[in-house]
Length: 329
Image 1 (cartoon, rainbow, N blue to C red):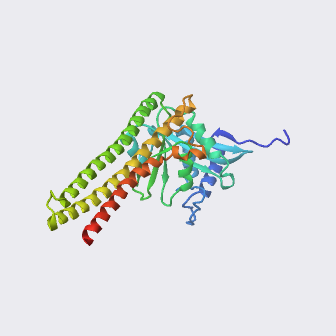
Image 2: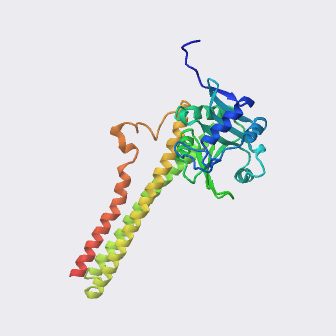
Image 3: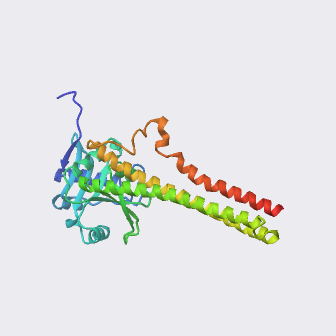
């Protein structure tokens, strides 16, 4: 009907699309046939297949789709299961041997003038909605860094699985997407919460032990300098040694608490990620509740952790002052 804008359609790739697919792949290839380097802006293919290769994949690939608008191929996606991996695909064969079956998204390519229009996401979701037999992976070349592809996969829920360098010398980042398993996520949520509580308790135990050690060192210093202690130059020398130990202990505990805080925040982030999924399915946010409120920034990163790190630093400054007094005396 006249005046109605054409819509993008996702179709199974056919013989009539092969020529356009090959041209599109060549236009976004990093290594073009004429030897000129391709642009890396907005993502790229390491190399394009020939028309014959794409034609052969029409029969062998379980998922080979094109995004078409008005008869023009704007994008295509080629994916197939690990059962159809070719003998020369070193990376895919290694992953299958190590981890088991998967679906590999071998190529995703969008025309330059259709980029950032959501077409790549449409193609991905078209595949992900149909596939639930095994994880879905995508190997992205990381030299030069394919930042656009990395952002894209992260946005779609992919996670970085590993980094490998095949015999061709081009390092790859392997991204993986797995369909959520609710029972497994519930179990993992319990483990994540336990780890979060463990890190929190561990930090308080560190601080508690620090105060015990500091109290002991302070008592030893007072004894060395008191009448009932060694007294004189010997007592003063022992007190200086204890002060140096106190400085080292304080700085050491401050460092331990700093890393303990980082571990705690990492565990908290894991709990929040799981809560987001559960909230989508009707659960309530607990750890992540009200963190979007600008007035509740402390709920994201509690100032208590910073105070815990600063306390040993302040004690170290006190020990330094004691050492200075002993040296000056």
